[in-house]
Image (cartoon, rainbow, N blue to C red; front, side, top):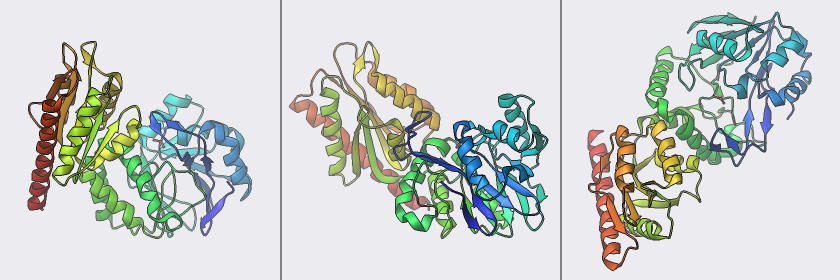
Length: 403
Ligand code: FEO
């Protein structure tokens, strides 16, 4: 990837990582990009960097615009190593006396990663820095999604460099939203569901404060994926909707199975849900990646979890999914648990107790069937599914009347 001028004097100098497929447990079938931005003014600034192993590519991109040694200052919006890993080698190249600006927590976190090699200077929320013709404003966005996270806003171009916010794990030759159209939204949704959902309440606060400050945002440039230029409001609106965790009339049935009995239950329960007019998707946890399941969970009104009992406990893939999902704290759901068992049959109780902190409305009691579901067992699965579907419709009605 060569440098690309995205606005007069502002160049995208990041890299594409076409082949990354696992991003700390998040599946990235389309790879990702690590975006960095070179601002050429009286002072030359680099906003964010890339993963350490891509340092040379980034420097080549910068070199296609100017000599990297002419960079005067670096801004680190976020310490995580996909954006800061290149900083030490970069500073070695451009001069270690140059300042790296970051948030107060960034100062602490960068030092914890790199020791005292960097000349760090922290900026307060709302602080500004003049580059000459342009002004940078720093906006603290703690816990979106690290304690050190911040955004950098540049005027007069009115571009928000939003770190991980509004990003997507997507590597492509498209640069702007209008080049990819609707195809970008599933990537943005997956990113939100897996990275930012836990901080949904904070996202709403940040969106509110951005609105209050009256920033005229004309482009949003995240550190992953495409830039929101034609319609930045689209991703701002989507973030508000996802953060409110508004349910859609849909259910996901996530499960694993040993000898196809829990699978038969899952499919029959799904058929019962479908009969009520609620959309439903069964998701076998050895066929679907946990991060794709999480994307479906984000706007589902019901999450139905099926696990066989294995060695008096949960099936391992189900335990993995529950641990992952519980950490991201999806709210405002109907929950239901089911499973086949041989003799002890603890799985249904364990599913519910594991997810108890999420405070979902559970369909009680969960459904357990010993060994294989016979005709009577299948009828009870179908009825269980219908009850779930009706609970979803009741939730949708109460949401509608609350508006
Ligand atoms: Fe893309 Fe939190 O790093």
